[in-house]
Length: 86
Image (cartoon, rainbow, N blue to C red; front, side):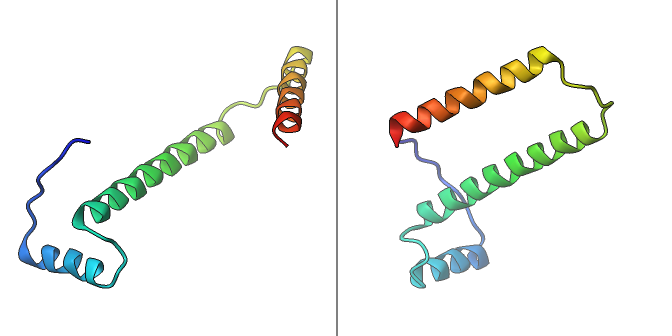
C-alpha cells in the first residue's frame, strides 16, 4: 500500500479528529479512503447519467433480429450462470 502525506488546516484536522472520536472512522487514513470511494461513486453516477441522457437525446433506432438474438443469448447465459451458482 502506498502512503500519502496530506496537509490540512487546523479546522479540518479538528473536524477529522472529531469524526474519529465519534467512532465513525478508526483513523484519518480510513476517513480519506472513504472520501475517495464516495467521490469515485459520484463520478461514476455522473458518467452514467450523462450516457443515459445522451441515449435519450439520440435518434431512435429499431432493434434488428440480430439484436434480439444477441439479447436472448446474453439473457440465457445469465440464467445458466445463476443456475450453476444457486
